[in-house]
Amino acid sequence: MSYHLRKSILVTGGAGFLGSRLCELLLEQDHDVICLDNFFTGTRSNIIHLMDNPHFELMRHDVTFPVYIEVNEIYNLACPASPIHYQLDPVQTTKTSVHGAINMLGLAKRTRAKILQASTSEVYGDPKVHPQTEDYWGHVNPIGVRSCYDEGKRCAETLFFDYWRQHQLRIKVARIFNTYGPRMHPNDGRVVSNFIIQALKGEDITIYGDGSQSRSFCYIDELVDGFIRFMNTDDKVTGPINLGNPVEFTIKELAEKVVAMIGSKSKLVYKPLPHDDPTQRQPDITEAKAKLGWEPVITLEEGLKKTIPYFDNFLKNGSP
Ligand code: NAD
Ligand code: UDP
Ligand code: UDP
Image (cartoon, rainbow, N blue to C red; front, top):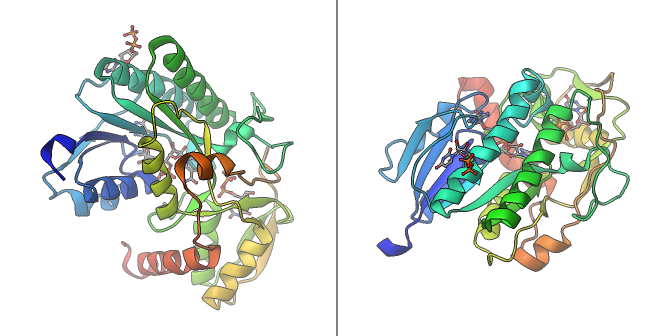
């Protein structure tokens, strides 16, 4: 790529699960990448292999504080994503979403950078419309244990659209549905990592509730490809756009699949369902197909085949 096309790209939350993969792909596309992270849930090991790349720069920083740098594009991913982590310090979670969005939008305003927000299917709450389309306003508890995350992300979306209307910022709002793959945090309690680790160790598989609740799981590489396609769309394309794999599974089906694929002796056990746990979730991706030419093709089985060895290695060697 010629020099003038090389962009300076900021990835907040770049040491996390999705962010570290995004940094890798942007470097492969010959861009300069600044990874900003406070290492709350992200780790150095996720990005250690990038540290020698002269086009990669790591900034230890918290997005709730201002940052003054020069960039062409911003991917705003900084925020703990798993219920266990975002509920550890819920006030900080809301601050990260809201103050973080204000600071990154301020940065985008000053530098005239394009900015993409990693929003979430949680803005739909426990949805009454199924599958979820972007025009659905959601069914969200504003005062529950998940609210710090859900309402924080909803407020961030509001800020993005107000900076767009008020300051003509070039915004892209992606609503991400459950994503899985290598580098998921092994202790963050998300369902795919929990089930794989439990099955590999031969421990009980902990199904919360009766396992009839559903989720739709997207493999990480496809999700991150969706981010980059979205960032490269015409300025008129602001979203929100759902990004996720529309094939829906119940949590019990996921447990059975993981146990069968690993050939584990683990038994399924049933635990109480957490408060406000959404009963169903499936993205309608008509918009993503039309505007980004994007559609996931990696099946859950194929994605799990790529993910299980990562955790197997982690359990045997303590690191990826
Ligand atoms: P993750 O926890 O692995 O990554 C989040 C990163 O943000 C971590 O590296 C963490 O250290 C960093 N971070 C947290 N607070 C910060 C702060 N105040 N300042 C700077 N850095 C901070 O989670 P992930 O799965 O990679 O999620 C990335 C983004 O995508 C999040 O915004 C999340 O809400 C969103 N998302 C993810 C999913 C999913 O299934 N993985 C689904 C919906 C939305
Ligand atoms: N900000 C930042 N980096 C910049 C520009 C702004 O972190 O390069 C922060 C700044 O601290 C401010 C926030 O972004 O509080 C919002 O900026 P904006 O210009 O919208 O608002 P104002 O500075 O007028 O409050
Ligand atoms: N879940 C489960 N067992 C676990 C972890 C999660 O049954 O060990 C369930 C959880 O209650 C939810 C679904 O799996 O219904 C997805 O949970 P996750 O935390 O991965 O994501 P989210 O709830 O944010 O979609």
